[in-house]
Image 1 (tube, rainbow, N blue to C red):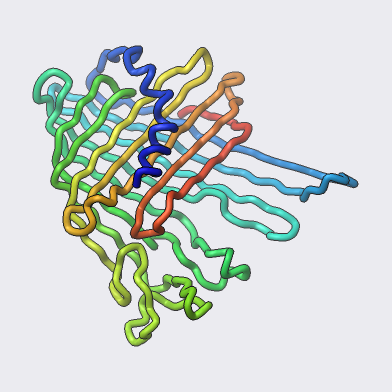
Image 2: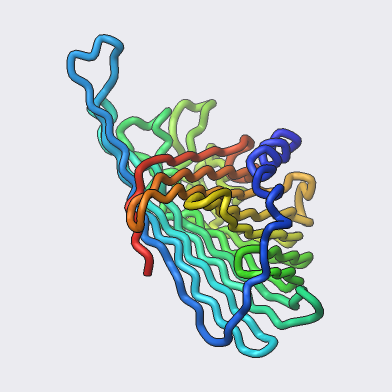
Length: 304
């Protein structure tokens, strides 16, 4: 866990050095809607290249959409994040590079100063099947997929909100539900083969995403903290930070789940930019290691 926290510190340290520069935005009542559609493209081509290399092309599409409502002392903030990416190489064929859907929703009522009473909901899943290519080159055994798993997290708490670009929420009594379907496979390193998680009569069935063999649901109760901070590093360069932490009171509370995403957009003109996304995830129910995803490329951005 120390490695996880150290990595988080490295990734977020630069952003918090600018915290004092965040100005409070003047809020207007009613709906405020804004979003960005992004298409990232990466491509490499080789011919008679003695140093070696393989032709490849990859693309990622993404949507980042906010729709917020303000009326008197009440506010309702919503964010949808969705992305999907593919890459194609001569030897490996077509494989996913990104697959994510996330909905965040928070209702708040003003308490005092910048603090609000809050109730939040977070939902996460993916769009298509995922595979363990290290052990399944032919993609015969899906290890994840749509609602497989799906995570639903919700609970009451307190929100500190300086502006739409600087806020965090604390929820000491949070429910977290994990759902999976029957058609999920897990690689058994002892057997050297895949086993189906739903095989109740299969003595070799393994736990998946913290869910016992034969079950499709897991409930947790714990402490949840989330933060959001977006600012301009310099002219035409912005950084967005999204962080969530969760500790399960019912089992191994010292193993804190972490999900941190950093988006840096280096604007070229109204439609073109260079985009960098780095996401780190730690969830010992999924895998007992720090997960890391990085996407970098030329982006076509359309606001709506």
